[in-house]
Image (tube, rainbow, N blue to C red):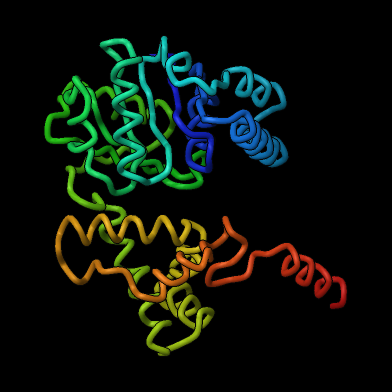
Length: 296
């Protein structure tokens, strides 16, 4: 398996494409617009530059990685010769089902179809295809080139052969694959999202401020990043989407999103991606921080 198509050139998609290409795979990176593909390729190039600066790879390695990636705006053309397709589109069930129907029609019969979904049922996704045994979840962690874990999700009909193939493939990428079964939120987000939601509830109830909550969890629980900062990093819209999937799946109030999270998403305060969430990531704020450094 040396030919991999990746659907989506956003944060997760370009990270997945980067990882496969750096491991020697030929990658077809697919998105709906040339502008999105350019942003994705620019991000990959900058991330490779950081690795060169840290002497983890050479300039020749960077050039080889970039040469392994070809971009497409047409799904049918991009997946024509793919042995594996990894879908990394927005966490929206209707969009994913539409993509998988198209992939099922466009891909060779022996192509494995994987989704990077962080919470949506692999069984439900597989059901819209004619190859449910060959549909599986590959939930990479962000940032993909650095994080070692890949959560491998078996749908109800996913075959042992496909599961074993994807487990071994993940190891070839230098990752640690962990097999889990198909339930809402899987393992990572079933445990993580209620914690983030509880941190938001703690803020909502006025128990403590943003920095105080994050400081308690960083210094008291040895977390590398506070839960509110992590929520900003993930994207508050993504957190809300995952919580809604789990709430709908389990009908348990402990997964109900905090009203503060709902309101922030409706207001467009999505975290790092929008420039503001629980913290301020705006250009003016960055300029203020730089100015303060010079005044010290």
